Image 1 (cartoon, helix red, strand yellow):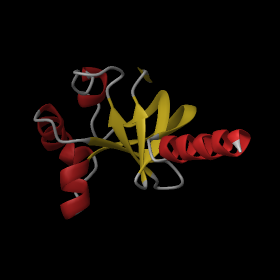
Image 2 (cartoon, rainbow, N blue to C red):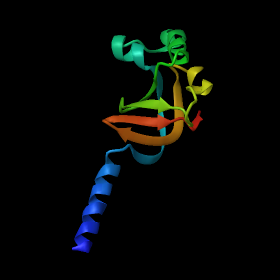
Image 3 (cartoon, one colour):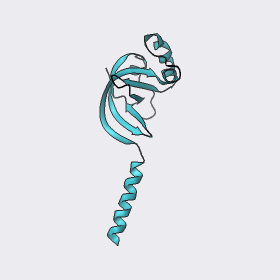
Length: 118
């Protein structure tokens, strides 16, 4: 009986941990930096949208990375808590970049921390 209780408790803990964000590990993604507000609402993107995208990112609107070839969107996160979007991202809005970081998925949304930008 004690063994059955321990197994049950273990399953409950496993299920509770599964409800959190799942870290997929280190990831490097090539793609275009997008202003999520204008891109999602109006389809605005490209070099002509660079200045607006920079202003939106500086105002705190989430930046997305659209992966080359797949069109998959990653919401970019700063490398640490209580930081804004790195200037290495903001200054290159609507440009092609390679970002390396840690990938997380929660609620059907994929996030990528910005550890390096090339």
